[in-house]
Image 1 (cartoon, rainbow, N blue to C red):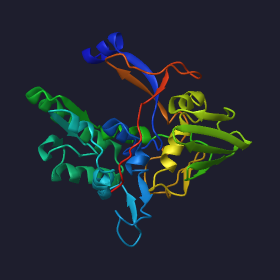
Image 2: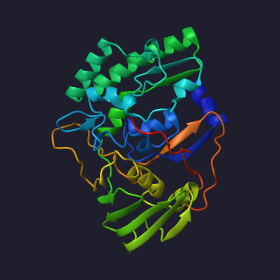
Image 3: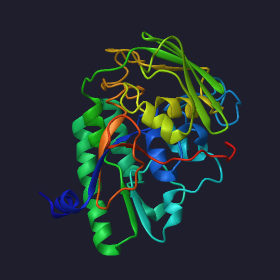
Image 4: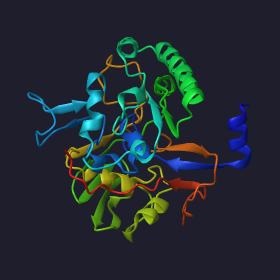
Length: 317
């Protein structure tokens, strides 16, 4: 075992954490960069419709971060929200989707050679090609750390991402959610209403109980997370209300049913629908070299915790 990983195992901390929704590459990175959820930041998903027609162009006024439009994600983020790169004196980032706070020379892999290799790997759908890119980027990162000893280094290894999403995994039953301050949830298990008044959250079953947790009123964010930590949809109350409240979210949010994806056949070699609101795609293991401060859950698995993310009050660009 590598010395660093061995030390983390002996002296660090391990938790089962809940990611944001949608739990897909890009939007799910944003809490790490900013401490905020994707919806309030103006990046509600990999694809979204610009109903205000402020950021996207005629004729469809839509954004898709798959491919060349990924370069727009930083600009699409709400103004006035600092990133982790702006909070340190020295930094480097490799294959970073977000560049706010990074100088050009601090963005490793941001050159025509890499863009060409990444474009070929994307078009071919080649996991092996992405893994080759990871190895090259890893070597560059190691050299830069040895030579410069920066305060912060962030490296995104896309080959690992592509490998995991190329495998089949169980997906959730279909559900829809209408975006407003009160959000209606429909699934095979019934219908419920999610509501938010100020910081108070509520879950009100109407016909059946999609979360299987019973009715809840006047919960704060931590209480809402604890209430559904052991359900099939971890942190669903907080995440769906946060996403539904974004002006760039659609009127209906979808979570794929078992064995299905929303992309057309042949459009991608990747089979996993990480746009799901259901566990296990929403939970993962997290290991730290230091003890993590995490609230004690009132119900559900005692090791489960959610990232403490705020809500952006900045206006979307």
